[in-house]
Length: 189
Image 1 (spheres, rainbow, N blue to C red):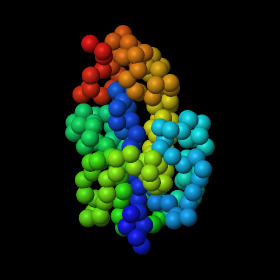
Image 2: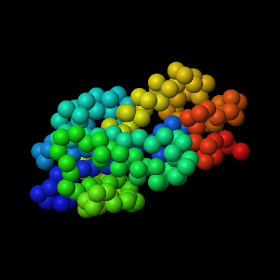
Image 3: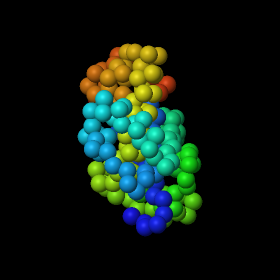
């Protein structure tokens, strides 16, 4: 959106979950990058996301991932934690530095005085945001799958921490884990 500068696309994953961190990614793609599958991560199958993630990491001019823990989410709220995770992803960018930022959604805080634009449903409209959504989602899903081995009763290998009926039933039966967001309504009551 800003001609002549490297533009970082930012998106997050896990904002609506009951458990686990919120992940964000920032990606700067080459101007000529295209891939027939590149789209909002929610529109892709899990298999396609995992096939596309290494392509994005390999082809991007720069990429970075940032995380905010469940405790941080409880402390500052999910919106602030999502924005902080995006800032951490921008801090983690490898390679070239951005001259501007484009963010999926409608809220963001200034980052290092760089110009930024927020775009609702930007992950379906801009390749760099779509790429960020895929990296954030695959990184978070991998983490939740790994943590499901430690806390198998919650089914995180399947629900990834989202508020499914089975997840809420497990919380009611076993109580919350250290990864649950205590500021969220965890059970259906």
